[in-house]
Length: 485
Ligand SMILES: Cc1ncc(COP(=O)(O)O)c(C=O)c1O
Image (cartoon, rainbow, N blue to C red; front, top):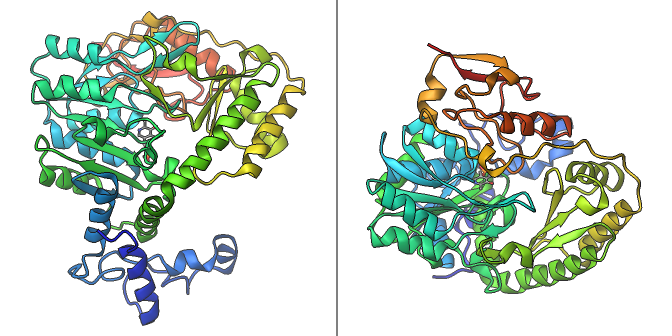
């Protein structure tokens, strides 16, 4: 296929040449009605290219096949059979993939390190999860993705499971053995869904971890906005093989999606595909080189340890996206939350993820020597600053994280519920999910029996500035539980 083409961008350029008079949404009419102060901040071009997808970018019947061709080019670029664009994030794509594979009450094997959108998928559909446990590194207090062996065992115990879902890379950049898990699934004729929200760039450079379609996944979901050049919310799900029906997949996405997709999102994703096909190897090669040298420099700073080989050791993760630089702040005597806040307040540097003892600095194809240097300098300054002793977080033991499921997430979500002081929630069944964010992996799911360990972890975490934004009470003073009797 001709990857110099960009159907969406070409259609937008053609649209602008026509100088249409619009008597249809959007109401701002390409910015004419937008308030000046709004235009001053956002710029007129954002409004100018905000059009209807059908009856704007393309005609009423989409006869120009603009989106269709852009999706075909995307699939071709990454070696998938089909690609579908979503403007509702991987949060929508993940749910669509689940609905394409399983029906209400079907059992699906799911890595417990799943993102909260997977829990939303379970709640909406009534699919029954069998949780496959990640491997816990007690020293680093970090979960590594579950192994193929863990999925094998789960299939043996639940031969009726209709498929499996695994998250890789994790928000920490650690990766599963996707090939091994795909083999486990395919030996039984079951599909594998990979939530590869953090891996949009993987197909475009050989030194990055294997991307899910190459490893044999049936459906994989990527957020183009996380590691690529999409606008926030731009996501693609890819399909290959005969185990998942493309019509069901598309219709599932259609059920969940907006009827007013943002054309700007399509345009950015289409442009990113062209950019990656043309220059991806070079751009990502530069990013990898920058990240490698930043890793070494940061690791040389007093108190900061960059984790790398340790993460991909035996019984740990299968691979690592080295563009995600995981910096352990423990020896500096500060928490990741403090480091993140200080960098933002004092050096205007934002990092991706922070927890009680780590921050993640994410490199992408957009970085250069200057931005890399700014990060290293900011971190050096941080190590020369004296910050108060962090509030300690009571870290859960592995067994505290393995909460017993006593109801499905859907049953618990729709059950009669009440808010109780979090101390009294111990032993009760959670009716809501409590998710430290980032990374967005729920510590408690609806339907799980709450333990004292996990409550202590969340309460002390919040006191140390951990964010639990989706809880009804983000302070975690109270927790919603299923009403007794
Ligand atoms: C592993 C994982 N899956 C899915 C998502 C949802 O992606 P989006 O923000 O594009 O909806 C995220 C977002 O952080 C994520 O980390």
